[in-house]
Length: 134
Image (tube, rainbow, N blue to C red; front, side, top):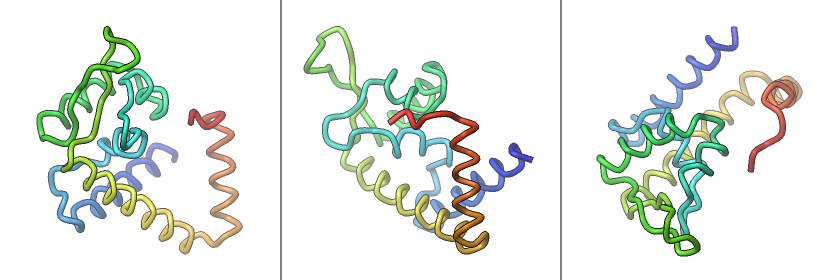
């Protein structure tokens, strides 16, 4: 049941992104757009932790977004050996639209379930995944 819910929500998010003219942005890209520090950028390992995916999985998403011109890798000013992932101007615009699409999806879900059931669902999901990594 959880896998089906995940698929349905990912599909709804993809539709919301498509409606915003973001036909080349997948729901999986939200892992970057929702967790990156918009101004300073974020190390890939931190993005992976925040999004609760493997470093390798995050690297694939970042590679894809870099190819599409949404992010770039830059030297970390605090550690010359490390890189941070930064949004490009195009990426900042997409991050804003991605956040709006997620908010719209959450609003629709809240409306469909009602306040009490929605809050209960969020509480139950939080129990399953543990503390918020942010």
